[in-house]
Image (tube, rainbow over all chains, first blue to last red; front, side):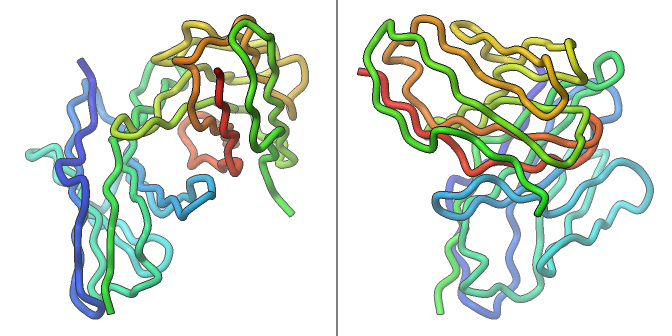
Length: 115
Length: 112
């Protein structure tokens, strides 16, 4: 079955330290990969995507993600965390099916950045 | 302002009473989708639509209906709601299916 895994329910980081939120996937074909962020009482906001090309993708708010095909991973990273980065982060994979495909989300990782 | 608008934002209702959650986007997007978010399960896709009059099932379509008569609107219909449909629902849209999605602010449904 096709799936997305975010192995950590929660990640705790001190402000100013680097952060990593992990994502691995299991899909057939060449997936499109996305990261979204959700703040309390809000919908999800797009951070970045990988479709093809350079394995290191840069996105909004200083976030970046590295696509690793051999490890089927797409980890989200930021060199220096801010308290305002505290939120719920979702990895998502679009599985090509026909002309569009559907979107599979991970269960989410809560990021907590302490001052 | 580009946005996806869902209504209502909150609804408490009873088992079996038909309800509709509306979703409208003003970005002329082709693709629209509905998700439900449950603790520990993340977001799961209910239905999606690639264009007007074209809809397809996501991963959890049972108990839901959708229609896409106009490009901007994609209502979610619960013909006979049950307590296991108590959840937080999100509508989303994108220009095409492989593009990043814009999400509404969510609709919290409680079915007693």
